[in-house]
Length: 165
Image 1 (cartoon, rainbow, N blue to C red):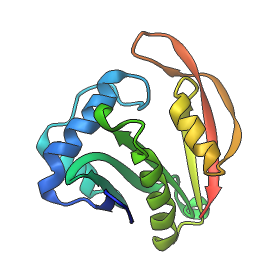
Image 2 (tube, rainbow, N blue to C red):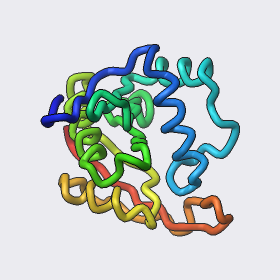
Image 3 (cartoon, one colour):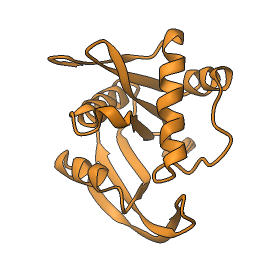
Image 4 (cartoon, rainbow, N blue to C red):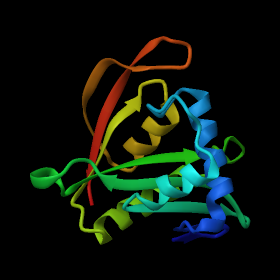
């Protein structure tokens, strides 16, 4: 996928230092991912990103500024439902990088045989993600009150979304 100077492609081993840094930044911010510790080193990052169904990266002006992971949300009779996580470098937020990631993820999910993309834990204070998902016509399934413990040790609601692919 390409949008002028935004390129989305599958990750490769040379991308690991960049995507590990972006992923770890989001973890350290403590406002989106359930992971707390430890932060990934390069070896762990390579294993983690290589074992996903798909890991995509975004290049903006030849620099990696974002990524997503795509994997099954469940197994067996629910194996047609995918789940994904997205991370954008702070310097690239507001530049449509997230939109490029989500659109590519929807396309890739279909190519990988998934029928639905479901997000289990969109933190209610993540207004940028909520705005984007709703712009892209994700359906809000419901809310889990106090489902996320943020970095400040405060509980926040999480929102569930889905989109057919």
